[in-house]
Image (tube, rainbow, N blue to C red; front, side, top):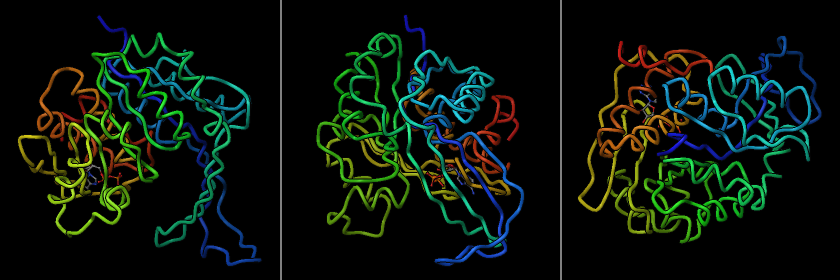
Length: 300
Ligand code: ADP
């Protein structure tokens, strides 16, 4: 019997957003809109998305002992996430400084802050959370050696889900644990590197699978997704919606997929549900603010 359907290990950032007429060049100052502050970071986003769907969710992360850290803890608790694993202090809360111009193009500077101080020993100290969780999900906005330690700490019958974002080449030990590895187009190309010899996402899925994961999911935005396991590649259709803002759609998709896999659904079925959650998330602005309840997913 597990206490949690999903343990998310990952980043928590405050997103500081300013709208500008034109993004500044080197040495230039431009005036912008009022500042808006949003809870973000791929780990925090995934945990909120899962909890809003009804998953019993815990987050293992690190924030600073500061106002942004408290903002992040509040948003997790408001969504129903268990924050017992959120460590406080050691560095300022991670920040993303985002300027957005009227065409929607943005420039982003990320200060990883406390996310970079989530260390392998923090993972080792959270052993009871790992043993209490059916599925563990992570991303790459925390140190790679922390992800390696996490893979070593997995309970024997738990399931590991990785979205390698921001992407970088991965050691075989991490790849072999993924069930599934979840990538968008850009992440697929970086992970494949020189072995990306095709323009066909179905080939990427097969090539990625050959690198060792037990299963692979390639997300294709409005085109839906592909799932791949030893029995072949299958397309998961997208749901037609009027997209307003795709920020955080991949995090919502991954969280939903991880949760449903833990409930025992086969990969294509869980991915079809996750595609509905991703579609719902793009119909509203923002990341965490856009994540749907089960009723909203059912109403799509
Ligand atoms: P990321 O945000 O990581 O780039 P994607 O853009 O591929 O990820 O989105 C993740 C999933 O969300 C997609 O596989 C799809 O199911 C859903 N999704 C994203 N954008 C849309 C859209 N415009 N219409 C419908 N579904 C979408």
